[in-house]
Image (cartoon, rainbow, N blue to C red; front, side, top):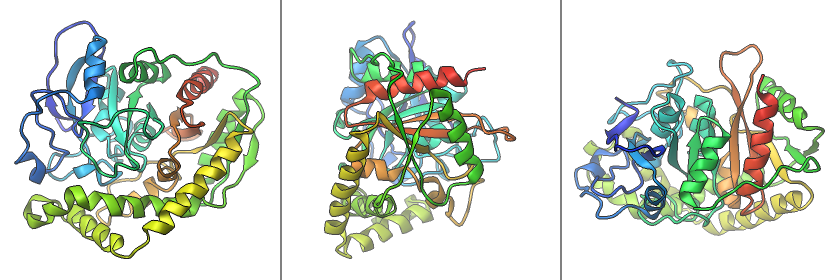
Amino acid sequence: MTTWILKTDEPGDGPRLAVKDAIDVAGLPTTAGCQAVAERAEPAAVDAPVVASARAQGARIAGKTNLNELCMAADGVNPWTGTPVNPLDPSRVPGGSSSGSAVAVATGEADVAFGTDTSGSVRIPAACCGIAGLKTTNGRIPLEGVYPLSPTLDVVGPMGRDVAAVVLGMRLLEPGFTPVPYDPSWTIARLRVDGVDPAIDAAVDDALRRLGPFTDVTSEHYADAATANGVIISDEAPRQNGRLLAEPDKLSGRIARRIQHMIDVSEAGMLDWALGVRKSIRAELDAILARHTAIALPVLTCLPPEPDEADESDLVLTALVGQINVAGLPAFALPVPMPGSHLPTSVQLIGRAGAEDHLCALAATLETALTP
């Protein structure tokens, strides 16, 4: 049962909602997938606002889903709670940190799921498991009752088997949310970045052509923004998690090392540089989005890797996604066919701040165009 930390299977006929176990559900402890946290966790007194909103609209909680320990990795591997099985290929990682949320909807155990995303933790598992997911605009969705990793970058976002399920998830998060009608005059800027498997770039290009021509663009700040993501997390995450180093036997070795590395980075004095990059990448992407409806690029540089004891997979999985958390913009992950592979790849559609209604409409139109 590695998909779930705890199953509830609440009765009713509303949509079944899987909640990442970094989000408070009244009466249940929030463990963040970590033994050190779980042993002290009391049942939450109230639902996090995102859960309360969903309940108020009839959603029933299916359970709390598994995740990377403390939301601090992107592969979905958790030696304490177990690793959810990638339903498309059990030999490959499910992606994280919202691993259980992705697997729950991919296997039909939930209609919609909530995840959190700080460096791609909704989009990465969505891409690995062949589902859809939406990183929301920074600050749009309340974070009260959500276990913090980096409050500057953290967001809550919905995941579903298709775009309609993600739209349902947005509505559960924000009552009344409705995509705008798709406009054929909308344009897409195709962001080119180094290090992507040419077959994945080709698959994304082939998918985008279903909507019409697109314009290639490049970014001066995208590589730096990936580093800035790590610096900002390193400044903020130890405030919540640094105390856990006092009980190293209750942390996995790689997460203990990661927390210590974050402390070291935070002491290196790079935060001002990272915040400067944050302004630069936002201004650069805003300028592109002033001319185009969305920016498109892959979610992943390669197909989902096999579990890697050396922990190299995290760098691979996060290469294209944490930059958007730094910029604060919304981004939709949608599976697209990968010719010659039993696995799909995934396109990342980035929109203007607050333009989730446009992104959902664009994703739905692309999904329809890709449907045989």
